[in-house]
Length: 137
Image 1 (tube, rainbow, N blue to C red):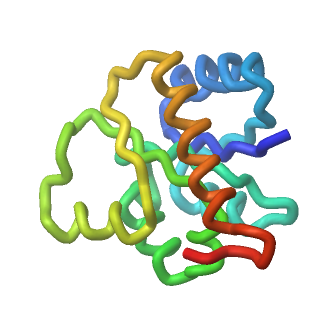
Image 2 (image 1 turned 120 degrees about the vertical axis):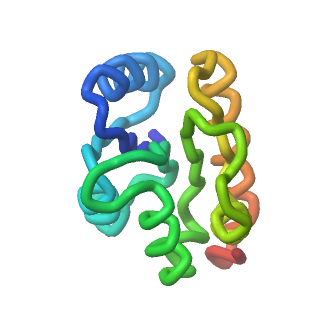
């Protein structure tokens, strides 16, 4: 069963996504802010998919991505789906950061079936890059 870290400060969004993802067969762990997100990503066993909200307290989504970028092994084994109300990053550095960690951007509001397809594709990409000898990214 694939573990997902669901990082969003909105309890209602977390609840609705938790139920949907559990019905899809995922094991969901929740984080309310960026600090909790990083703690979940470094536990054993770690979530392999990260649904990451852009706007969160303590560390926002971009700050979590910067922390991932500084830990290449963690970034390589984590499929990142960046959820934001903004369609485009507001700065070139943010766009570069999203590319560096291989994040897929999903605009809010999103269709749950579309989100499920993005999760499957992002996970498949990370799993394929890992290969038999471990992470390649």
